[in-house]
Image (cartoon, rainbow over all chains, first blue to last red; front, side):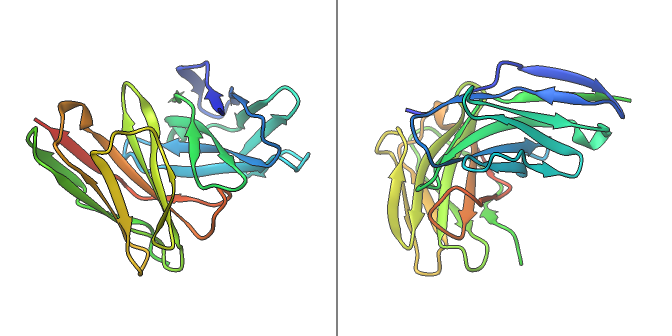
Length: 114
Length: 113
C-alpha cells in the first residue's frame, strides 16, 4: 500500500525568507502523481503544485517549487519570498496513475512571521 | 467556470440520526471523490464515483454510502451517526479517471452531539 509521510508537524519562516517542507512516500507503482495542497483557516483545499512521476524536471509555480527525488521517494516543497498569505496547513499527497484516490500526509502547519 | 460546491456547509446532528451531504462538481467533470478530515485521523479517502459508478472505496464501515447522479452531482449518506463521525467532509471533482487534476470544494462541517 502507498504511504505518505510528513515529518515536520510545524514550521516557521520569516516573511520574505525561504522555507522547505519535507515529504517522503512509498509506492511500488511506476505511474503516479505527487501534489502539495494548501489548506488555510478557511479549510478550502487549494492545489499548490503537482509533479508527474515520469517527468524528471522539477515542477515550478511562481514562488513554489519542488525537489523531486524519485529514487529516494522524496518530494519537498520550497516556498521562496514567503508571504503572510502563505501561512496555512500544507499537505503532501500521492495519486496513482489510474485512480482519483489521493493519499495524504499528516500535514505541516506553516507560520509566517512578519 | 463555477467551482465545486458543497451543501450544507455546516450541520449539527444527534447520535443515531442519519445525514446526507451533497456535492456539485465543476461543469463537465465526471468524477467526484469524498474525503473525511478529522484531527485524529487526518484526511481519509471515503469513495470515488465516476459516471454514476463507484470506482474506489476506502476503509469505512457500511454506514457510509454514496451515489452519483446522471448530472455528476454526488451525495454521501451516513446512517446511525456516531460521535466519531464529527468531521469536515470534503469532496473533490475531476474531469477524468486519473489523479492528475482534482479540485476541492469548501467542505461540510458535520458535528454529531
